[in-house]
Image 1 (cartoon, rainbow, N blue to C red):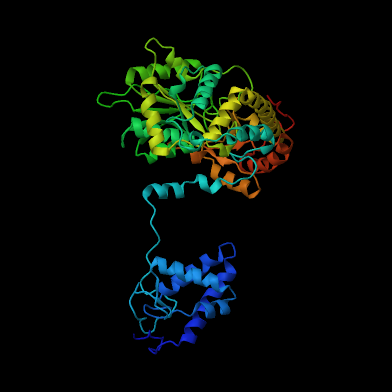
Image 2 (cartoon, rainbow, N blue to C red):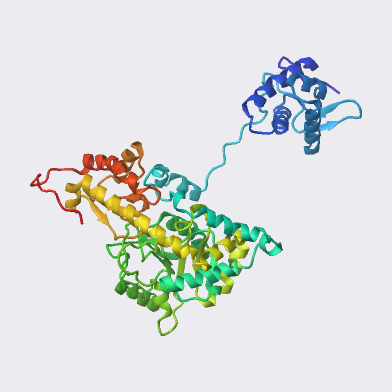
Length: 532
């Protein structure tokens, strides 16, 4: 067998090959301490064969010699060589050593370095158009886990001990059913608990079989789009719109048709003209519009139901933050109003989630579908996504059935109400002149939810404002990143993760930026407006 060529065309001596391998493997052992030793050695020798350091047909150093030079156990190298043989990189001779296999040309081209690849490197994988839209979305530039960032979780408000006990109960009696995929649509006990809860608190009219457990609102929307729409179908969406919703619907190939929201949420559009059918879906957040905070009044909800009944549009009701209201009584859900119509409804699909009432990592959401769609949605959810963790679902079902969930939400409502009040009062204390002029700064929406929206004058660069705040250690998201049509400048501040006692000091940072961008003298500088 002819020996491999060195850089000068002469065969490499065994000692030189041993030195070369040690020189290449030693730094890998030092810089990757978190990876198992055998895995690091295996990968390093793979690369040595692929890159021509040990060309095809060349004998590898004896395991005893290489182990001694690297300072590792010989048995470790024996296992590494066996793994490489199983993968086809080397072959063990009968008492004559271990040889590199013919996984590439036999000889290293003259002038090539032993460690250089012998073929052109392929370019990195290209993102799809969908992947590029995700990567380039401006929201990612401002999302930073600092105070006022949406999605933060205050662990001190969660009943850890109680939840741990409930999680432990099914673990003590696990069986095949609990460890399996579960029934289509989710754990029956949880579907029943959710049906009771939304019926008593939101006026939703449904049987447990109509409740489909998902892992998030985004997955609920994906399931709706896959089963009820075809690529290219039109869907009405709010502008500005919850980013997860607009992204999920657009990624299904649906044509988003944005409609501007006002202080009462999304107004029904004019009737479609001849030859132009109404969109298949309309995505609405009537109980607390995200991000503006608008609440849709009863009259407008009835208008939407009449519009859907007349034109065949299905209404997707995302009951966002409906649990958190700090004044007055809630309006009934669209789904319940639809079920009360003379024909029994069937035009509303109702969405909910537990990420803001329990904890973000629970990954449990749900949708309520019309009775005629219950079976196909349950089967499709099971086939496309498999059902979620049965242990978590059973613990949540018990948490709800025993009344703990309702008590927990009441406690959160009190705490978040106090945080919202602290945020509003701090803004009035810091920027009273700006808030006194709605043309400069305006608190949007009502006393609901876990975020506060501030409206800015048209033409304001809210992304520049958000960038300055982020540099000061505060995350306020620009409303423009949620716009899918006409840009509406504003700021979104979430108080769910910020204790009330910390809010005033944080608002001072935001206020400094707002004054710099928006402030101008009042007609009477001695007049200080009174907070509402």
